[in-house]
Image 1 (cartoon, protein in one colour):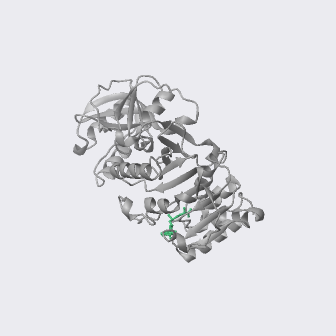
Image 2 (cartoon, protein in one colour):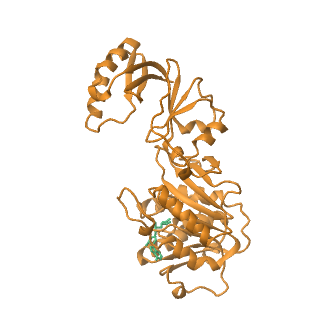
Image 3 (cartoon, helix red, strand yellow):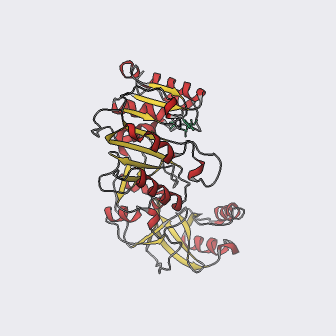
Length: 384
Ligand SMILES: C[S@@+](CC[C@H](N)C(=O)[O-])C[C@H]1O[C@@H](n2cnc3c(N)ncnc32)[C@H](O)[C@@H]1O
């Protein structure tokens, strides 16, 4: 079976646990042209085997997966069977075992790896994660296996996007201690919806030559067409702010930018690369805001990082918690048929306010949105 057909198999199994096939393939695709010399691919906690199979398939190299849970190991075997052609498959192996007990894992004496992948398990359904919760523990596990990595090898370590900046910094230091000669690139990736879906560290030959961090916005259908922004600084060294006191004027433009880009700390690189002129009104939260005086002329795929743009029609002083009366009045005066509240409001008030606005705006003209500005001001914008 070829790589075009495992979708149905992949979609069905271990939905919670496994890396989605398209994402697995996209990551593997980005490293397929690296010259790794000789060496196999090793996954130290292979789970469903999806990511491992994607590497093996794209790099055309045999692989070894270790998995402590025998049921998952069986699934990993099936994944390899379905995805890889026989000549490659015959050289691949899934081993049921504990990566922390290397001596119990039966491998050929002369086996060497050009790529090591580790995607440790972490607890589900909690808001924040810590390094100590990951199983197997990443630093300890990589330390145990590093002698089997070839000289110009690479490592990809998957982490929880819910790690705090302090935890990331600690990991950065620890990885530098264990792999002092390896470059590190931290990668934030998102499939949209403003959320970081994955955080990972790429080391050695898979790291970017000159960049410490990278933001990848995965294209939902086309793996070759992801948006990639890179930089030589790390987000935990940056100072993000809530709302800045900038004078917002009528006819200014306000854009809501992909929040996952901000989490990666690469927003300024992206703004510069696009030659957008303006300033950040807010960098934190679900709706980062960029204020600009000209429309962001951007016909290419980079546009996808702009969630919404509007032109300011009115700025009023009003506390949203006091109701939407003034918005209805001004909305009708300016000819809006719809105004969406794009701001943080108490969850119990949000639907009430939004439905009142929806009902009481009568005009059939513009659609727009409302955002909060400092000092209890609201900006009413027409969507463009
Ligand atoms: C997040 S999942 C990996 C998912 C995988 N990347 C995929 O594509 O399906 C982590 C896996 O690590 C396994 N694991 C935990 N501790 C382990 C250990 N000490 N040795 C080997 N595997 C371990 C878990 O059973 C789980 O299947």
